[in-house]
Amino acid sequence: MHPLLKFHLAAILPLTLLVACQQEAGSGQRKASPQAKETAPKEAPSPANTVHLSAQKFDRLNLKVDSLPHRQMDAQVQANGHLKVPPQHEAAVTAVLGGNVTTIEVIEGDPIRKGAPLAYLAHPDLSNLQARYVKAYQQESYLRQKYQRQQKLFEKEVSSGEKVQQVRAEFQATKAQKQALAAQLKQLNLNLSRIEEGQLYDQIPVMSPIDGHVEKVLVKLGQYVDAATEMFLVVNTDHVHADFMIFEEDVHQVKVDQQVSFTLQNGSTQTHRARIYSVGRKFERKPKALHVHAELLAKDPTLIPGMYIQGHIQTGQKQVPALPDEALATDDGKTYIFTARQEADSAEWLFKAVEVQTGAHFNGWTELRLPKPLPQNTKYLWNGAYHLLSEMNKSQASGGH
Image (cartoon, rainbow, N blue to C red):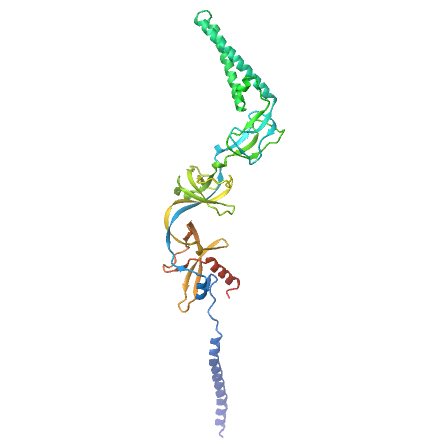
């Protein structure tokens, strides 16, 4: 063979082998493609705020899905406050004259009538005060008769006018002294007629100034109390009313005669009703709010002054989006409803949780305040919200599997 031909064959052979190897490798890659498709990741799991239910489970739970209706509901202003007694129905009882406590007639919680004794006091000045009154009483009677006689003598020109004026001055001074002592004895709740007959008291009764119940007993037997010492606190709970605080932005909506529904903040679910009879005209500083007073429409002995309350003031009516109470579920302080959609290619239902704010509540329905408008054709779950919320939480706990 020619030497030049041998050189060309030696150069072409490696190139041919290289091309063949590359084609075989390419053929291997093309064959592997179907396998790569088979192992590709499937569709991502549903978001954590959604729940899937089969048609069978949907029917078994008797779930109801419909559009979002509008209902006529009371417009309301929310307000917090506490139960209170007007000042004319709450009394701090003190002693008019200081003394030692000799008897206590009541204990805390006892009913008491106006004018009934709560306790008795003793003091040496009591006898002296009564003796001075008896003397002034008798002296006044004597001087009245003397003045009348002098007046008659003066009219007959038997006595001088100076004599009449002197007796009249003595009579008026004694009369004033007697009236002053009588006023003191009346404040001590002592019977003047009895004292005038010489029957003196050795104890001072401390009387209740109002009807009510004894809320506090602040003294002990043998204790000395002066005129400024509070001895008892008496409260008439028949006149308990609701005292609400209304913030500045809501003041223009609140008026006298509006109805209020409220509950106690002690966990009780019982609803009480009241009517506004007074709206304050001065803002408190902290917080900046007005006092609104409402009288209870029904007496309840379980309502005690000082209890904290939460109320809703009915300020009018309005058409609002609302759902039945069973369509709402609360979790960790947040309230949710569920939108509903049935998959087109299957009978499965897809529910999505939507956080909402709530407003008025009436007759088993609750006003909804959506964070943003949803399409008009959106369907909503009308019942079983807590079951779906539980399913959603389970899904979150298991990582979406």
